[in-house]
Length: 262
Ligand SMILES: [Zn+2]
Image 1 (spheres, rainbow, N blue to C red):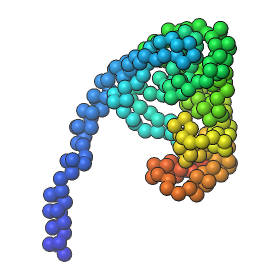
Image 2: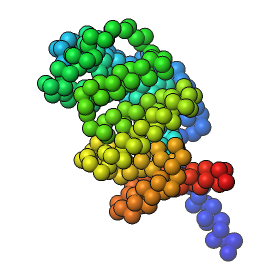
Image 3: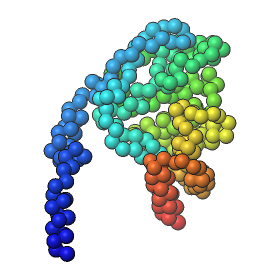
Image 4: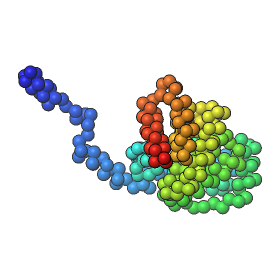
């Protein structure tokens, strides 16, 4: 017996995991490097052409290679270091005020553009934003994008997606009242989108949208409805491990909330 054990120890000692694990020192060095990155260095100016008024202007974009993903919350709100890419995802034309999330900016019909020129432009005053946006700048930019969504009369899903993001930013601002207001709007809009729209919707596949309906529902206290959407999601085939783990966390979250309410 003893002999066998010592063989195992020998074997363990001979295993070289250098390629799999970084040493504590290396990890610290990497962290220091990230901390050293000036947030402004993660941004660059991209030239855009406005599809409404043909104005060419510069907009801030994030260098994905300079930022690091840390983790995400129950509703998939990610945390990055040293800046949050979502903060820079709204494009605003500084001449006519047309604004949208970057993936939707070029998607506008002639009749929608006319409406923007008629309703948004007369009321719009261009504003010079600092290189690094404050949370209030971020919220203001997304609210202008939401107003443009309403004027363009886009589908429920896009409006809900913008509301959902604004909810996140109010969370960053620690303004719970407004966070819940926007999360409620997102919850309602996501449900309409799930019934009526095709996927991907604003970059979300069907399973992720189902998960987000459940997560926003849980955030605003609609626990039973949230659980119904979760069981609907769990009945689907081919869920990713990542999503399965999130479902587990969300169920635990709801369980805790429900017990603390009693
Ligand atoms: Zn424009």
